[in-house]
Image 1 (cartoon, rainbow, N blue to C red):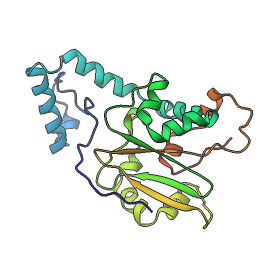
Image 2 (cartoon, rainbow, N blue to C red):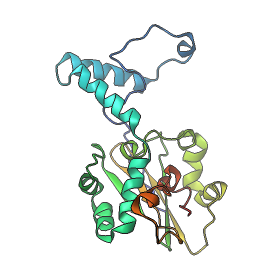
Image 3 (cartoon, rainbow, N blue to C red):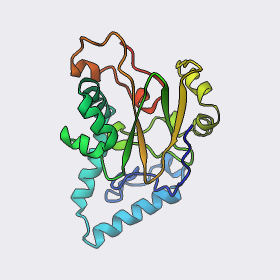
Image 4 (cartoon, rainbow, N blue to C red):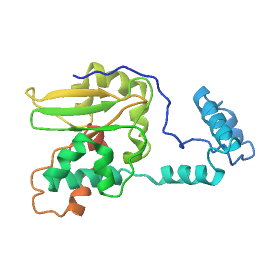
Length: 222
């Protein structure tokens, strides 16, 4: 089990905020019951400062926020499907995901994303033990279970039990590697191509790839 714990989290990619600092809505009673976290306040303050200093235009920041809201796991699935049909691309994806993404006209963001390949002997699982660092430029926003304390602790201490709860039963001979994401490094799983998918097109293959398979809690099925 690989275990990386060099965390100095920024709790999000640049340009992505749960609260748009440039569009100040009237106070809403339901939101007032939940105070902003330290990191949310810092994000809003930095965004306001960048606009004030002319480092970025307000419209540019809004466009970035809107772009992040549109990202779905389909972006990551496209990379996986191409890797399944093109061994050369798969090697390039594992070696440098940013360059490989650019081949498909895809910007995967400023934070490096390591792509970990599943094999018949190795199964990879992604977690962020301290918060919810996640390859958002490829998979969109993380699911609630990924951010839960239960998953963040148990994925490290008992990964096989966690996988079993997602319906993923692995033989004892398969090694489970758990990768702990940080603010400076994110991970995505390259799942194995499922049996019975040999005649499918690249587009059809991409439909087999889900968010959970790229986190590593499940495996693709035809």
